[in-house]
Every structure is written in structure tokens, then in C-alpha cells.
Length: 79
Image (cartoon, rainbow, N blue to C red):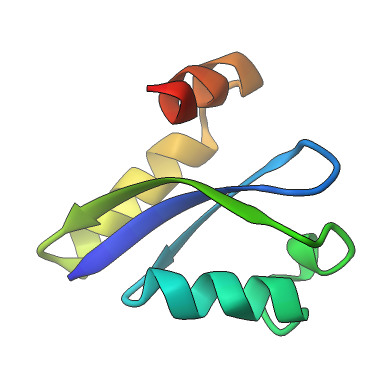
């Protein structure tokens, strides 16, 4: 499975990414071994995930979420 995820950083900002293993990727973010954006914003908390059968679907959705406004991302993670 391919996953799109949204993290909330310690400064309240959101980070959206793609992975095949959400738990591992969150650990990597929190250890400072993942995205440059999250390195200075740890700890991060997983707020939202979506699962897809294909990598291309997941990466397309990742791009869509990244284009959302802050309010739209808040609505997404709050459900």
C-alpha cells in the first residue's frame, strides 16, 4: 500500500508526505532523518493518512493536499 500522510509539527505547521510505511516515516521525521522541513520542527505528530493501491495515485493526492490552504488542511485533519 502507498500512503499520503499529514504531520503536525511542534510549531503548529503541517507537513504532507508520501510513504509505503507510515510508522517508520514518522519515526524518521522525529529522529531528524527525514524531510529538511521537519528537522527543526520536531516532535511531529501524525494527524491524517490516506491509503492507495498505486504510487501514482498517492503522489497525485499528496500534491493536491500540498496545494490546500491552511484552513482546508485543518478541515481535512479534523475530519
